[in-house]
Length: 235
Image (tube, rainbow, N blue to C red; front, top):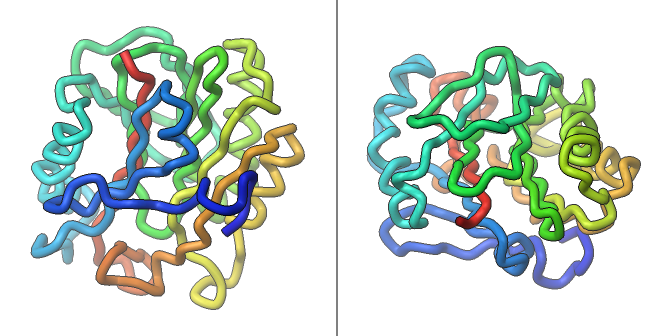
């Protein structure tokens, strides 16, 4: 495990015995947000295209949101084009909304859920408990090369007055060597450090090494599901 503090901040624990949900103690400890990572859903056929797969997973993902107490909050998701564009969510949608052309978002709105779907790429959670403000980005090989996490941190600083030294970063499970040729999780951690983030947590879990718990686009040759990263400021 990596990060400050190194002992427990990047560990995960289940939140509901009936649902494969992981929580992040370092983010929970802030008291300002709800954060979760919905892992592989058992007994769901995911050997279809992405749109069909997400439809098949929707009921379980909604159940997970309900169990977290945010089921009736609007969920904002991203088109996820493997770029570095980050949206500012400054107006709460009345219903779930998918934002075109972006791979992440930042907000200081309460009662709005941010969601990113991943199947090897990393979901990076950013929480500023002082302002408070949050960010959530999709950072895989391409997004990391384009430093999308740096863009999100800059937006939080410029738009909300966040001090990067106060931001807590949490990396989700993602693919890692030797299952992938690039260790983009290590690059993300370095990008966070370069932008002044001091609290960086990463469990080091590889999605391709545990197909009972995670979906892996690489290991399953594209025929797979998607995990759902969720982040929201408490009301």
